[in-house]
Length: 249
Image (cartoon, rainbow, N blue to C red; front, side):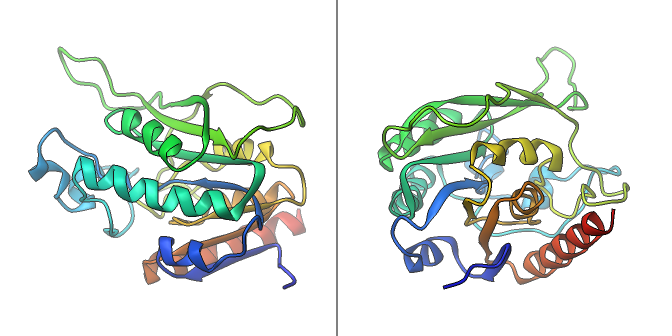
């Protein structure tokens, strides 16, 4: 099948991954639901707006599904889709996924249980994170990454950390926040550079389409899925508009 520069399917992640060919992609770069947001089960089972929204210009987006698993079921589910992703990604290819401090230990375990070689953790530092008296600020999220077996020494060096504020709903342009857990476009544009130009990046949790847009802007092919029809529609519009504007510049 001839693959366009980017494609976004309406589908559930595990079923979508199972439909893809073996060794079809160079990398899976994604931002799965964290199922985090609190110490207690009642915290985790809140709506995603209650867990992640703030009453300021940074907040945007509808609730999304799959973010209320308990710790054991989340780790099991992560292992399921990561195992399928390892089949789809070529030997030596990349897996990179975002998580937060609560799920960081389980995420690194699930990556390895899914058959990947764990290679490290890359912090994303948020200088505008909320502060609380008497506590350290939770000012970072983390990119857990690994490889599908041994990987040759190829490509350029990449940063070991990122410092960038979270997208805001009030701003204009392709970094405008459209999803509750949207990541900064410039950060993801750097992350996808671990894939050689022309390589295929897949994202089974496309959300606002940031990974697909970043990959396309960096000359990589991108294919993803999203199970929330509203988010998928917004992501397609966002990607198409941003790419058309970049061509005109």
